[in-house]
Length: 149
Length: 141
Image 1: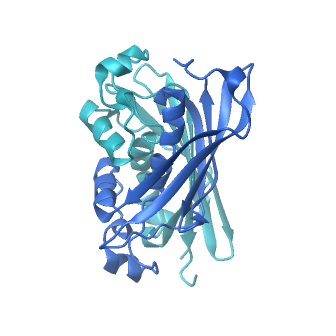
Image 2: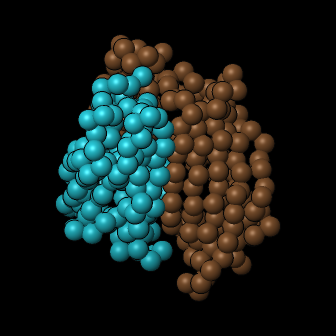
């Protein structure tokens, strides 16, 4: 059984808010070698105009991947995660995420295409703040190998 | 906030920075925990081989996250990165014992003096081969 192409075009309801914690941001920054003081020191972040420590450019993936799980963990979608390879990722930042943000994600399944035994699944997560302000658009493409590939 | 880099002084082809990243299994476990991506292909050799990989490989998002540091170091403001995209073209196997060594270079690919933005093209190699394709970050200057 392959990926269910009928899921293309689907939009999910907004997720429960994800609260961005200061220690989590610091830990994520350490994990990707992001040693800029604005990720770690509140005063350094404020000196750049942010209310609290600011997220590294790829932090939004943490929130986006939780939203993508709505699709990937749905057995009806037919995505065998042991056959998944991450093919592409793109972030567009509308306003930098910082500690204290309460982030809601809306997941869209933009495309499901199949070629040469490989299904390409492209999702888009629109992240927004508690006041509704757009934070980031996260587009991710997964390549799912078919049973014979 | 921005302004540390003067757009008028930036030219296509300028090297904005380089970094050498030494990756061990411990780094992947740290990333798995910090990111919530606990896929066993990033920490369990047996599982990785069962799904057809040579062994444990780095998270693509780990490599993507490490690579953009040369851009942040250059602009002086992590919030100045307005766009960042990559294609994952090759996996990075991480041995145990041992380490995988990634070489990161950022070069200015385009400048828009009016919009005060620049595009930085990132090259990330492992054992001489590129592991990311079309790795580009757009930053406000």
